[in-house]
Amino acid sequence: MKDENLLLSIAILGGTGKEGKGLAYRWARAGYHVLIGSRDAEKAKTAADDVRGMLGEGVSVNGLGNLEAAKEANIVVLTVPYSAHRSTLEAVKDELQGKILVDVTVPLVPPKVSTVQMPAAGSAAQEAKEIVGDGVEVCAAFQNISHEHLLGDSDVECDVLVTGTSKAAREEVIKLTEAAGLTGWDAGPIQNSVVVEGLTSVLIGINKKYGSTHAGIKITGVSR
Amino acid sequence: MKDENLLLSIAILGGTGKEGKGLAYRWARAGYHVLIGSRDAEKAKTAADDVRGMLGEGVSVNGLGNLEAAKEANIVVLTVPYSAHRSTLEAVKDELQGKILVDVTVPLVPPKVSTVQMPAAGSAAQEAKEIVGDGVEVCAAFQNISHEHLLGDSDVECDVLVTGTSKAAREEVIKLTEAAGLTGWDAGPIQNSVVVEGLTSVLIGINKKYGSTHAGIKITGVSR
Figure 1 (cartoon, each protein chain N blue to C red):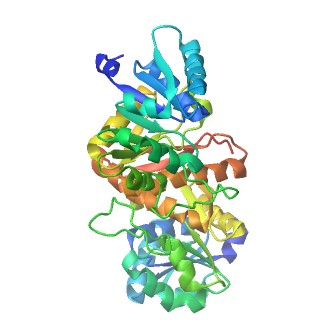
Figure 2: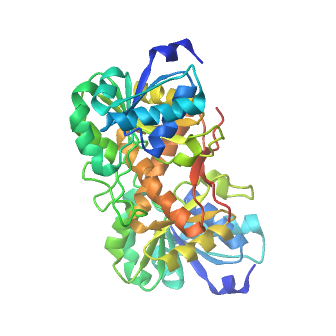
Figure 3: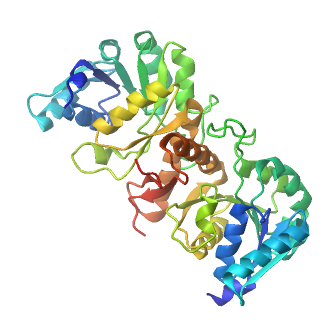
């Protein structure tokens, strides 16, 4: 646990969902201040209690409304379903200025969730950038990780591809992947988000076709 | 070597390039009739001689002009640079009707080759489908494999994601990946090609950033 983590607060908006709660668990375990956000602050508090219950005393996890969570955090992670993507961002965008937004959203279009269907902006992350404006660094990450993997201490056999509006912001998010016990890779500019978001549809299709439940990817051929 | 392979001819248009020559080597080794195609038939014959020289007698590799190669083959693989994608397809499209086209093209836009920049159709494979029409099943595959890996007998530490206009066509192409000594996955409909083509830009960026030369991907979490 690094001391600098103790200064950094991470808000997870929509953090009562499985993906968000898994990330809250991993980052709280690593020593970050975690703020679980929800439209319903009571639900957020319950989720925070759950995570504290799993990790014991000495971790910092609290539940708040989305707006308050975004306001108090240095880094804001968005784990809402795509249907709530725009409305959540519009509600909190003033609180995001000068911060890093990490978009975990996959723009799935039911019922064809294994077919890539991107919004007009090119990807959910680029759409987020359009909504929040130039004062926010927008990264996208964690779209391909099964939530079953996160809420526990097992190794996750899936890498994280991190795209984003600046190299410095991507580096910050890669640190967060490592703190969560995952391997993160700099996957380039925000325009590349279509690959990572779309890969989720490919992996859903592979799960369906091959009878698996948590297909993932690993980068090969690179020694670090 | 299966007997049925002996009935199947594969044309590789633009097959004098490194990627195409590597695929020719792998498929000839597996017992397929391979037709290397080029705008310059003499160059195609030289490339075919090279591959025969590496594999010895008893393999079937011949060089032809692109049009003749497409005409004689059951399956046509396109490995030209993106700048020659449309013109090559327009020249051979009559010969493709009723066949499977396997598009290996990545629509890179120099100088920013590590930034995903897709054509208006959504991907090179979808553009190919627009050009060749409904009489052709279009698949896309092999975009992420480094050519260094193919022209030789070493294991390739990179999987092949196969997209395409029908499940049956994707199954045929997955057989071709296996014949080449690679692991192929059904990555869904042709709309998903943006993920696999775009992944090449992500991998180029990873090579640049992490000092590697042949970053690839493996699907994890699925037992077959």
